[in-house]
Image (cartoon, rainbow, N blue to C red; front, side):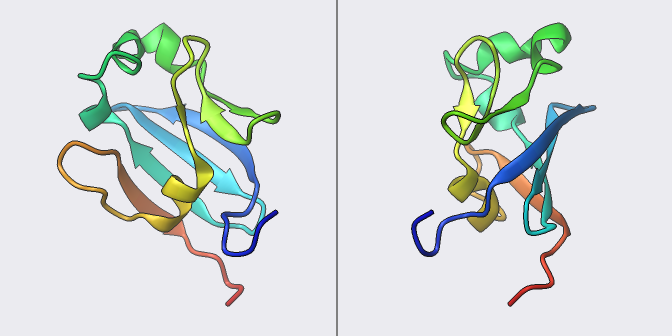
Length: 99
């Protein structure tokens, strides 16, 4: 792992309202609202609840991913709280206690 990169993601769970709950190895928990991304070509299939619910951590590339190829990088999820109106919104639920 390169310095200053996000810890490994260990779990991803689909939640209501196009939110993915992501758990990191250091105990950090973040909710990622992907609603603003649903108008993009790669994320639009996730409007289907069955497809959205198939989110998982891709161990090989270290992202959260869906079967259609949509994915989100852990560094983006870990570092950003609000990326702007056309980006995913990220809420910290359980901040890491490690400084």
